[in-house]
Image (cartoon, rainbow, N blue to C red; front, top):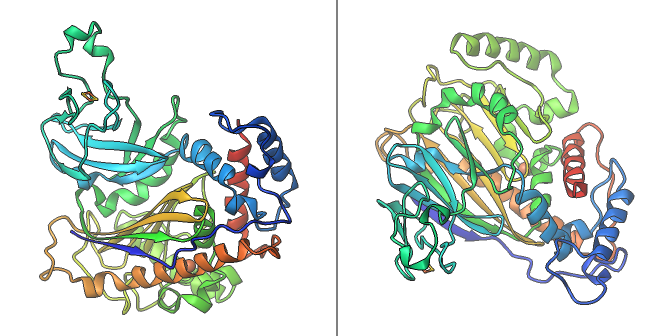
Length: 438
Ligand code: FES
Ligand SMILES: [Fe+2]
């Protein structure tokens, strides 16, 4: 698997915004360990109340360290987060560690092949138990004093002399859900049910065979923008015509958002739907709206001449999973707050966001191909990766430009297009509801 780390033009200086004082500046007295100090909570509530429907967010939502801390605690700390692919844990003993919501999390496959997620903190005196990013082990042995944990998180070390029951000293468990090869974790003590999302995602995604796929290529980006700037950008294609010439050639998004070429698109959808249902795939959907409050999964037809999201529209790898014909359109899966995916018949591309700072987000983009595919024989990076590498990097540049703009003393929220940016409004409404929930 190839992996690249790319830092975009990071915005290093967080500018103050005199028009709307930051919550941090509104703190009274010394900072406390509480989630948000009372004065800051009041200021946040006022800010949420002041936010007008149909307008972009006020500057502190993109800049303020206290709101950022609350984003991580309130959203990333208690909602289902995409964490990786089950094909990364193909064999018993395989593990990966991921930085999620400020925690190091170990994802592992046990000897009975079940999947586990645990906080990577030793129950003795808090050392990291696992220092690697990935590997295959029989057990995790803490490097500090040698306590050993099974892949299921149970302490197997003899600690009789400590005077406590080893059964009470398992690694802290994190809720884990696997759906069609995608892994989601939830750090909340009592996570909300994942089932509604599973029911929405599984039927469309399962035929793509992601559980038995291979990660062919990964790029880690550090984007100089708030995570919400990046998700807002993802939720509209108003910018596509001017920015994404490769994407626009392959997709109908611009036409759909403008209500253009309705008859031709409807005919293409009907033709694709009939064919896809014969192939055992979900039918075509024209809109990219979320189907649940925080998730969606829909399959869109590609423009005529394109059977996959490659530069020339032609296949870039063998068919995946149970897909029997090259044109399976583009399956789009999105979950707030950190994930989206486009999957064609021959490859899938997943994007995972990890907030780092108010003005910085780590973004991991993975290209998956069929499990048995061999690089050089069945696929090549020069055909597999450019479509989403170009499209992603075009977006990161836009997002960094927006982050610089919201830091301007002259920034004020701008009006959203009711049609073309209604999904941005959907994201903002979801975000504000989550933030306002105690
Ligand atoms: S901190 Fe892990 S064994 Fe002591
Ligand atoms: Fe874009």
